[in-house]
Image (cartoon, rainbow, N blue to C red):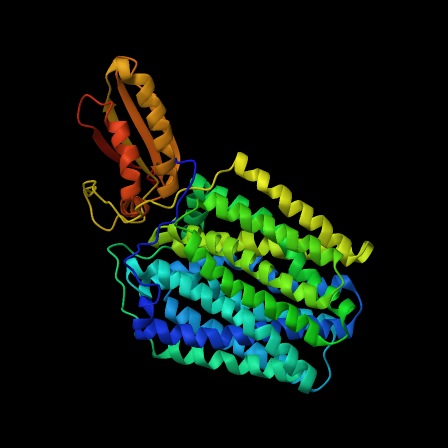
Length: 534
């Protein structure tokens, strides 16, 4: 694995080319409006809580309520997104969020909102987003061609950060002028565009040679895939720690803004400048990603965000803080874009929604736990003290690169099903199992140590793609003969295992086969159940 990673977007692909695709363009515009509404909702909820209570913990719990559903439901949501029709799933969740947004608006207009009810409704609104998010991210490869995926993801990031730039400031103006309930109403209306685009999307029917996975099987496959993918595990660890410390910013900024000014405009302006910086950060990332290693870019962005936390904790000048928010937004966009792009590129299509769900599980879990802990710390000390400590912590996270280098994403994850189709003496055997697969290797004795090293590395592929047990044995009567064995839950799951092998795995398999002196022999055995006689 290389020491550093270069993100090399193809120079011949225009960053604006995906906009030529009508469906992608319409969905991007509708999502921009919806995200602006979401940021208005976020600002409104946080500011409304500051008017309902002076408790820093309650204010920070708004972020926990927003993130907790992702922490609890991300993995099941990813499985659902890979099993069921993604169009229908997105449409259903958008309708759910519209309904909850209407309830929030009505309760606020009638003046019956309480701190606990606000937390509950925020939780319910986030529930729909949590179920939708893995599927939303997974549909991009369906909307654009493979060569347009990177610029499409970049455009999606620009759209999100543009909404971050516009939404908070607009929310601050609306709240100050006509009240928070109007901001909630506009958020409810913002869902209509996405609902219309998704409703009119004629998604092609996708067929598979094997039946769809069950919910339980899909969830187990997701956990297994992440467990035996070292690159994904490293990415989850790095992102989770960074986001844990960064969550203090979102949890405690409303408290700091209220100290600086009693108006919602201060909070709106701080987030507005942060959003402008986020857009600038997306532009900067496009320029530097092909010149510097990902590790270098990520470290610089993380260090800068740590500095922003420290300055937010110590400065009392609103104008200066607004300026510094430009740098904070830029650094936030850089490391978030890097994490998002890498996790997209590390997952093949069959498990992409589930891997994205695992990423959201770690990300939102870090936000939920971090927000609650930083809010609790602020309650017992001070918001600025908590921000200062988190700034030190995110700076210390830079040491992770010494032991946990970022994985390379320059891999081909397209399917490479080169194995012969396993034969069966009878039909309708999909549910039979477990299946024992044996592979016989005849190895040059002089190369046996190298073969064993290679086959033990190869076991990760077997386990990642479906094997529940694995082993390698040598023949007592023929020491140069080795038998690899692994168990798969069912005949159907073994068929899926064939379709999960990728081009990127080929090098590792060829390394194993390079030590063999004869062609391998593969056998399949199905667990024999005892017949009960009366």
